Amino acid sequence: MKTFTLSLLMTGIVSASATGQTTYVDNGTSTTYTLQTGDSLYIKQGTFTGNINDWNNGGKVTVAGGATFKPSGVNGYRSKYVIYGTAILPSLQTEKGFSLQNYGVITVNGGTQMNGSAQNWYNYAGGTITFNSSVALNVNGGNISNDGDIIINGEFNINSSSTVTNTRNLTISSNFNSNGGTITNYSDIAVTGDFKFNSNSTIINKKSLTIGGSFSSSNGTVTNEGMFYAKKTITFGGGTVTNTCRLVADEGITINNSSTKVYNNGILWATSSKNASSFTNSGTIYSSDNGVIKTGSFTNYGKITGNGFMYITGKSTLGSSASVGQSGTTTDVLKIYTVNRTNTSQVFDDQWGTVYANAKYTVIAAPDTVGTSNYSCSVQYVQYVILPVTWDDFTVTVSAGIPVVNWSVRFDEGTTFLVQRSFNGKDFSAVANIPADINQTNYRFNDNTVGSDVSGTIYYRICAAEPDGQLKYSEIRTITLNSTVSLATLRGLPNPFTGNFTLEYQSAQKGTVTVRVFDVNGQVKLMKQFVVSSGKNAMLVSGTSGWKSGIYMVQVLAENGGIAAGKIIKQ
Image (tube, rainbow, N blue to C red):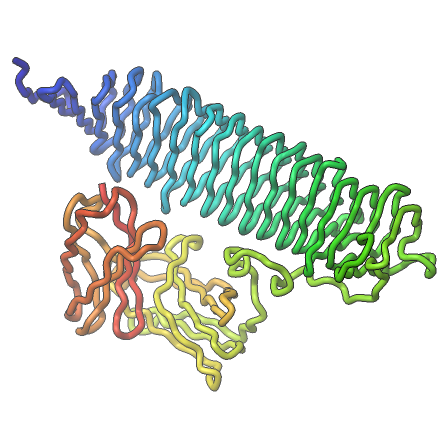
């Protein structure tokens, strides 16, 4: 009969269970571990620099907050890896059974490939993954979900029916190639090079996709509800395109395949920023009521029908087999303004094709290329667009050790001001929510959440939220606090936690505060009031047994409008 044993190995601890599964606890060694099915390796503290033999499915590697996992080599990558601290990997060549949950910081210095079978890689809010070489997804059903920051310093290749879902920042410093994948973007994707979109691929862009080079597709499905922007050209060579917001190219838009179908209820804009504004259509464009085509030169070899507008400032050509408008009886009107036409007896400069009766030459104003009110843009993009709030003055000073925020602003009735704070100049969170008074232009907020946990530079900005949900931000202002007077952060202990946890909170005055806890999807998991005294307080939070493992955002709302925010992780 096998018995439980416990022994010390250098600075590590090994425990063997009655089922034969082994748990290794490493405190920063160069040991070589071979993980069998069911085995676990816990990097508790220090820096691990040994080797991992990960040839069997069903193992687990966990890196605690504050610890560093820096293996000399990993053979296999078949286990579940959970990173709360730091991981520095020589490469990442995964196999069947691998999965990743990152709450901390991961750096992969060599090439990365998802191989074997379907896998889930999660980068949670607050997590950062940097790939210093190319990344390739080679398995059907693979999934990357990013709620934090992912930086790829090389090419990104989806060579299968894998999915990528981005809710924060995905940055690709080279080319992006999709050969069958599905990309859903709720936030910001930036591609330095070209984006090649091949057969059976799908992309849904709800906020901002910026391409430093050109975008080209041979087939697939493109749905744009935000800003889809290429600094060079956009070429659609097949498939279906649906645009309800802004699809923009600086060096021209081309639809070069007769099978391509474009449904437009936004703006298709070939800009003139590089003196290369051109729009060429060989497919079929279905224009809805608010659909706009804006370009310099325009050449149509295909079909354009429906309602909407065309605003053309350069030479316009309608090919011999092409058409605009619709035959027969229809209530649709396609308004076409060829601004500098050379022949006033026809719509286009060179007109060999068919112009149906509902396609009419109409003088119209230049289309709106800045706002969103004319188009059916997503909520994510509408909130992203800067609004016409006018900031007259904005300062941050220190009075008696307390940051004092003052601003003067002109705004529309119904605006709300969010005072936002950051400790790194990038990640801002709200510390106050102040409704605007239409009779008041000058505002002041004292940030009373002062303690002794943080010192150095602190960043502030004001966010103006208008009644329609759009946001506009002020410039950023900074102050510097010394080591004896600094801004307190909200702390949860223990962190990570398994059951109950305690919130340490510094209050400027006696009163009642409201504690709110949210999951990464924004769902409220807990809302409870506590009576606090002036100074340091400890608030016990219970009832977390039904919470899933992961990261949670915590807010403490004071009676004076101040907000303290932090995050806590459940194992």
